[in-house]
Image 1 (tube, rainbow, N blue to C red):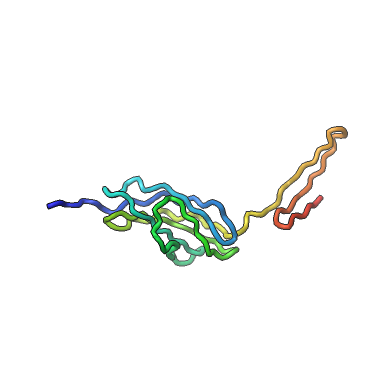
Image 2: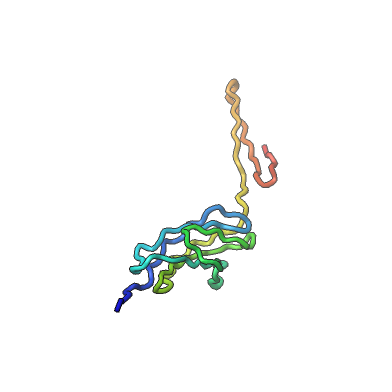
Length: 135
């Protein structure tokens, strides 16, 4: 007779959010420090709109510690959390991320022009979304 004393894994680290666009964000996290005595099989990722209800964000098993969530609504803020699962079942969810807004990474870029002969300078602003230059 063989006994399996595996238990559910601990919580993964709080996900890091990167590569934010108007309709997607990429999450990465560290596996749980305690796998419960059995290797982690997959991860479940959940998302919620700010102050909303948690909903599953992946419908296929995720075996890596990086996942890109698509189909986000531009301008909406989202929070994310991750849960590890081993053969004993799903463990606890990670702490949730802080809210991140789905938006394109455009912004403004400051340009400083310096005339080395006269030591005069001019500050310009380049709007990276419209590509307009302002003096």
